Amino acid sequence: MKKIINVTVGSRKVDLADCETDLLCVGLFSDAKVLDKVNGELDKRLGGAIWRVVEPGDFKGKSGTSALVYGEGIAAKRVLLVGLGEKKKATLDTVRGAAACAANRAVGLKVENISLALHKAFGKRFDLAVAGQASAEGVYFGSYRYDEYITESEDGRLDKLSVELVDSDAVAVRKLQKGLLSGAVVGAAQSYARTVANRPGNVINPASLAEEAKKLASGSKQLSCTIFDEKQLAAKGMGGILAVGSGSQNKPRLIVLKYSSSKAAKSKPTVALVGKAVTFDSGGLNLKPSRGMGEMKFDKVGGIAVLGAMKAIAELNLGVNVYGIIPAAENMPGGSSYRPSDIVTTFSGKTVEIGNTDAEGRMILCDAISYADKQGCDVIVDIATLTGACKIALGKHMAGVMSNDTKLLKQLQQAAKLSGEKVWHMPSGDEYAEEMKSKVADLTNSASPWGGVCSAAAFLRQFAGERKWAHLDIAGVDMFEKGTKFAVAGSSGFGVRLLVSYVTGLAGKR
Ligand code: BES
Ligand code: MN
Ligand code: ZN
Image 1 (cartoon, rainbow, N blue to C red):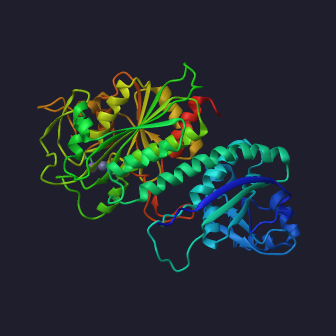
Image 2 (image 1 turned 45 degrees about the vertical axis):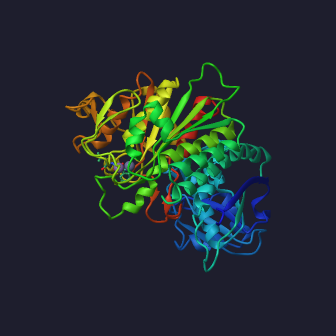
Image 3 (image 1 turned 45 degrees about the horizontal axis):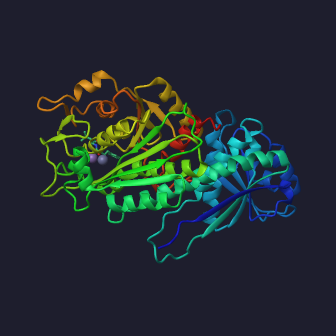
């Protein structure tokens, strides 16, 4: 099986014109009338080669565009102009996106060594460590390819990509380098998550996902991993997870990763990150339509985002105790499947009438959330491809966030801003909880189709007890249908950066 591209990042103090590299990447805003100082100086050395592309409008600096410039007079073999869009609209994600675009182009060009000076265009707008982190994250994101199972390809692809951030100022380089190291950890964790997420249901089932988590933990001193198999789930009374898994040959698991830090201050909360891992969601007896059903291999990505986040949190040694709780099941129709109208007793003791076997995510999450509560976690953040309604409401640009705690909501919104993984607040109050009441059980798992994002969240909220709780519905942002200038088609890895950024904030490390 092919390994994913091996990315390495570093930094170097060098004058841009003297930077020996296969590809020197610089940024350009779309509303700049003249070249800025950095590009102007390069242009002079290149005898006007940059201006000859920019002046006639052949390159306009739009976000997601780039243009190659060749010429003599500098040490780099080529220059890549990377579009940054309008200057006043630039955010930290513009830096990340530009790095992704450049790295994506480099892989396309099969260029192994690239040097990024993208941060220079932003002047003092961002702290250089923060820009360094975003650049590294972007490089991993844009260079990512998923081709594990392609045994024959006509033109092959790069095995490795070596990236350096360059600046002529030693102090700037030191700052960039600091952020670069964390960015590389987060970027690599996100690529890892994308790879596991892209694997299909015949490769990733609850047991093999559990093995993956074990493997991850065995490579880390701070991570431990406990797996509960179907017998242990039955002994614990985790009726929700068992019901969803009952129709599949591949039996369900509860994966519990734990990152414990000896340096975690008592004042810091213990956090539970809970991720839905339905390794394939056929809908069960309420079978989904055949069109697009294959996309439901991505129904495990909430759990995998937690896996990726735990990898990064442990490597960064963030100093906040964190549980990664991943309920894993395959939702299949069969003679032993759970049925519409069944009444399931969940781990919490609450009973749930099954209105629809396709509303399975909440059935596995409710047990995992109760488990987090019983473990004494102070804060519970769950992440799940929970509802088609969220995809309809917010489209493919942001995740829905719902919470019972304003401070937690603000922290997640701040993490979204910094990580570039956007969230939009939606309600999940008692009006919605009311809709989830059943006549024959405590709750139903599916009620009216209206406001399905909110009622699903209100269902989950009731399992968090008195804990601070938030829910991220990532149904619209889990994957890219088509490749873009920033990323290839397939898993987006959404959530890894957001969750790590949230825990980094708690740790007070930014
Ligand atoms: N995994 C789906 C939600 C989903 C849909 C994710 C599209 C990504 C893209 C979830 O399990 C589901 O089927 N939800 C149902 C709930 C309904 C039966 C109450 C839905 O959204 O239709
Ligand atoms: Mn479903
Ligand atoms: Zn699902």
